[in-house]
Image (cartoon, rainbow, N blue to C red):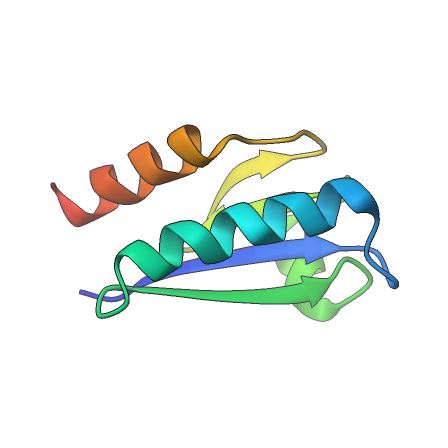
Length: 86
């Protein structure tokens, strides 16, 4: 099962959004066969489809995980592990 992490940010990305994107890339890098990370501007149809209004926004497997706050690597990795049933 492939896990999708989507990070939403303004254009250009703010410092907090860049940090969350790095966290997501790091977590995805730990599970290269199972996890894919992509980023989108918050003013996109993709962001609107999830109702993301605040950045950084993080969606895991089409469920909003976080919006408008920083997340730690541990928080994101635990959410990914839950999706992977690890």
